[in-house]
Picture 1 (tube, rainbow, N blue to C red):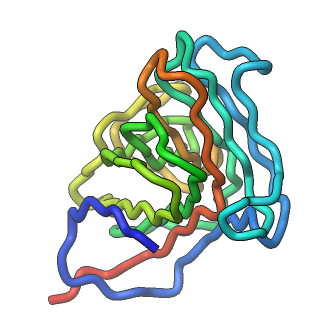
Picture 2: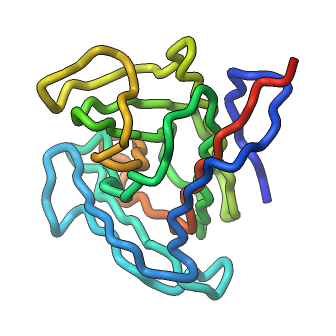
Length: 192
């Protein structure tokens, strides 16, 4: 499995605060939304992943007039306040994809949304692990969007809006699709 990662912390150790959305072994609820949303052009549903032969969430986006799409409202209220965290998105592709960026999208108790992005190059079929490091001590998000009454740049717990995955295809590049297998969070400690 290939790993693409953006590293913001060095010397990491795992602690007990963890959460996972597993699309392979269960069918958890989710929502989708996209720029210029059209339910006939943007879709996500459970299907057999041809790479693994197992169930996954098949995400499809027609990029005509669309530069982003979200899979969101992944219930994450069980995540306790943390200083440092590691999020992993596991996906599969059946061929090259014109997607240039993926992101994690936690939404706090006031619906303030934080985006952690990384560039990707999905130039062939394969399985991919996308790793994101969250530093709540020195906020390292690339952008925060106000969807609620309070936008203070601080991730306020619990994460009532849940976690989400966002991706950015090249606008007008045709149909992009991938299989979302899991989204995992774990709290980590900075080693001395």
